Image 1 (cartoon, rainbow, N blue to C red):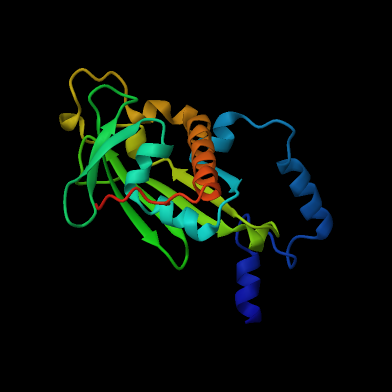
Image 2: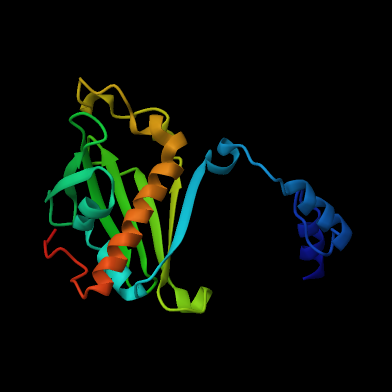
Length: 213
């Protein structure tokens, strides 16, 4: 075990108490902490947001796991209809001209994760992955409700459309062109989700839309 630890501590850029003093760690942490961060440094490769929602975590999960609720809380995805029996649906993303968006929900009730696998224009390769998790607020904030986290990773196709033949001819933008605004756009949508969930919960309304995929 000792030999393995010595080898581990010799790896470049690995900082552990065995090879990095507390004073060195403090100095390193100070160098990494700034008052202002460039937008691309924070959101260039990953975009993560989160918020507290005054709604039981089980209800929030139930709502998110219903793919059709995307029509409520997202800014521009609408008119979803089933494509196949494995949960694939297709709708329109009205943020762009004549743009279809394909989506499938991959949810785990025990972990309360809800991942949206999506793509513009075609449904064979759902490369736009929206990773969401519902966390009981009692665990992390010591109060009722839940915390919802949402992360996007910058897949290479955001930068270069791998399926140009499926794109509508009159469209002038690509989803990746909007990456610099993903934080702002997703924060607006997470705010929508918060307000809708809190309203539904406070008024005893159903959490799903009653449509089958």
